[in-house]
Image (cartoon, rainbow, N blue to C red; front, side):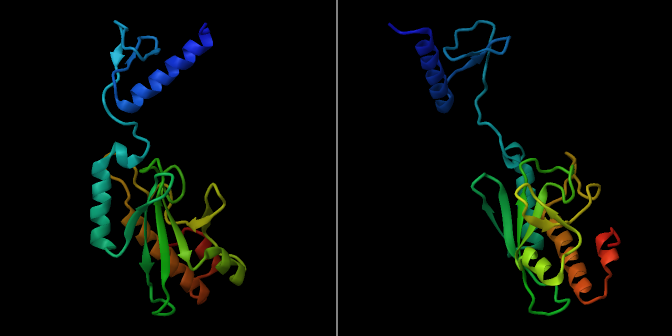
Length: 205
């Protein structure tokens, strides 16, 4: 004889299948989910997929990002991480110290883009090559760097107040790369003793 637990388990399975197939599911006024759609006072869940990433919520913003990158950094390529975050990758040359010096960058959008609650905003720029950890070990430390949740170093591109994050206007990956190139330029000038450590650490530039 089926138990109450068995019935509840079966109801959850049925609900999961209906949600996967996009079939009718209603929600009662108290928030209870009704898989069989029998509730007279309920609202039917509208068709559509859960929007986890910013580009699901705002496809127009994604298109604007692509247009900006195509205009200013056309050699950068867009890809997607396993966790769904989009990123650009490509090389830049400042030609400050050596015309052949190349920096290969990875520019990652965070899930909450656009957001300016942290330094660098919701677009993080990582130096793939050269490795900033290795460079820091060679020169005895590098000022003005940030670390993510996994303790990986990324470039401190912008102050929170400089990163735009409103519905009307938001900073783009192109802006983040421009800020990163500015950081790289200051870093190379610092290596060449044209910029002091105090100047590099502060918001002089």
